[in-house]
Length: 635
Image (tube, rainbow, N blue to C red):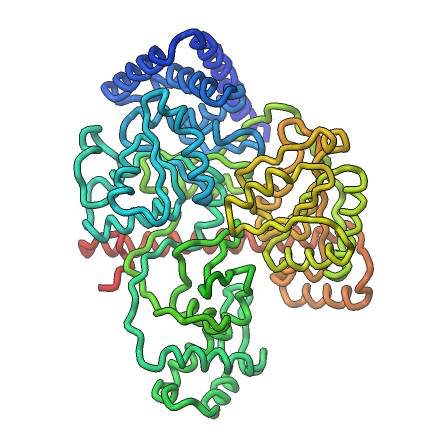
């Protein structure tokens, strides 16, 4: 253990010493003019591009970037932020605690790689944050002669091409990935899909919008590289809708509601799939069917019915998806955010639409597909930052060849942890949460209550309304509004109910009275399927040396426990039935930890298998002389 920790400690100490030296150089730049600052930046650009080695100029570049930050924002980066920037310059994923200022830390390596002239892609978790960061940080880059672009949905090809031609381009993983796929569909295989190459080649007119994949800097790296990795990016190709197909989906949905679990069908929890039994197939065959439905063979009827059964058994509104303007939009399991432009495949999306009674869209095949793992493996250089990376260090190293480095906090962490409270029933837990919130706001504290889904948020809202507790509910749907609400969550007596990831990337500023009363208190009402998401929620309190505390409130009816083996679940149900209002010993929380670790292992295996399948598919495509980026293309 000592042997593995010591080299990392020595490396952090080395980066910290280098950070102090760079900050000293930055201080000496305070007296020069803006024009002189820009002239020195031009000289460094020339040096970097002629020598082809940006790391040799790292100290000088970072000093200029720090001074540009000071002139633009009124403050300079802290030593630990500069140390994190050194780590990212070396291709590391850095773990920096929430509230440590990762956004301005990212400016330094972005400036460094931006000077190469091949394009830097700064990847954020949603379009609101991409737009906010691009707007706020563009003046820092401009003082150094670098340009900033922003890629969002709704842009034309010419607008996208202009954004990618900038030295630094902000956007989401989805936009960068879909643009790569669209470019491949337009132009086919090309040599510029990986490294940028010569600077001159970067500015040449090209059929696609991107100019290569030189350097990606990923904010919230664990969320994007790990949590989103189980959902591939796909460009769909609409299939011709057969006569009667819409009626078939409607019939299957109505029939699904009449099918008996464990008699007519069985549901596989781990694969989230429903399968008809022999009895179920016989029952379907004997059911009366509308005239058009009768034209489909039995196999088609069974397939559609199984999709509808899966939609009912495995997918919940306001947890797995939301319905906005009569359209079903998928919600990211890890972040609680809408995954714009994505649909479930093989008729599942249409089955959910039938379940919700909204217009049924045409089925889509796959014209092009790429996993998150493969997307970011196309970059010549990769770095990232997040508040929670240690738990995923092995996977990040194996899949992305990126090591994790933990950067110490700028000030000592004053976060207090209270023992978890476990209840037999969901109702008892919610009443206990309401009572604890009332007690805390009476003390002048601010309280953030984290929930795993929109449905859970609404359930807690009803209890708070019954108890007369003033509160604000925040769901990760409208990003600009959520940032505004989260920024106000540190006011005295303020109670904010939020899905676990809502407002991620926005600081909670504490009122002085709240700080004096003990700071922000975070109540986690369930454990998430990933311990990293729990850490992100807990990390909302006690930032930058502020006081703060957190506590978990759990119940035997929590969704996480539904993933346990049947024998364990039956034992829990007996315990809950015996004393539905009772609070259990805090040691019972170990059951939740066990369920969480089981799910984490299962999800890691799914990501591994997905990547393996894609690599095998690409190998076959290369052997056949086909474009490996379009390996799922329907030919």
